[in-house]
Amino acid sequence: MRKGRVPIGLLAGAVLLPVLVGVIVYSILPAGSQSTALSSVGGPPAGPYRGSEPPKGIFVPDFALRDYRGKLVRSHALRGRVVLVTFLDTDCKTKCPLIASAVGDALQLLAPSERRQIAPLALTVNPKRDTPQRARRFLRQRHALGLDFLIGTLKEMRPVWRAFHIVAAAETGSADIHSADVRVYDREGEWVSTLHLPPDLTPKNVAHDLRRALRGSQS
Image: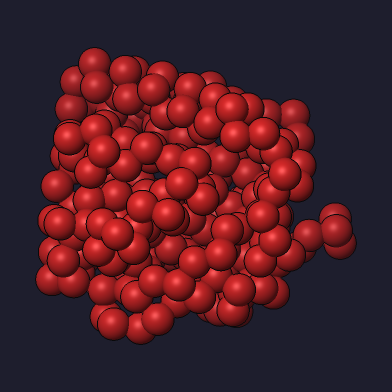
């Protein structure tokens, strides 16, 4: 798929600022109020998507990674489907469990015919810890087996992280400090929506943006 031509500095700022704000806000909430905050903080933006809209012209970068079941996933083979991408660490105790649960619940809100047109992917940010067994257990515990967890070695993952312009847990040294947004790419592979934890990452918002990307220019 094509790569965007947006300056790296602009893209990094757009990605990391919401992540840092989300980490701070989420970390100070009591455990019992975290899920409530996801659905009550902030409202949807004015555009067609519930998530924030990134700069135009950014596309899914090229990658080829195996999922936790051993299947090879190539980004260029996903053209024609709506692609959801997020970044997870099975050791993470704060953001990642809620992200996986929100995506898993969102997929259940879609009709089977809609789900067949969507490729929901999670990329490891902690390759040494995210083994196939741990990835499967993490997804099962979060009722998110519809989310495909892509893993790899540190050498394999580093260029992918750079291509997505994210900060990985393997680089920060903390399972709870890494880029943790949810991105939606349309059928042409263009990045159209970003949902953050908090304020807009809820199952209903994720399902809405996936449906909107499926419709594309039809609406």
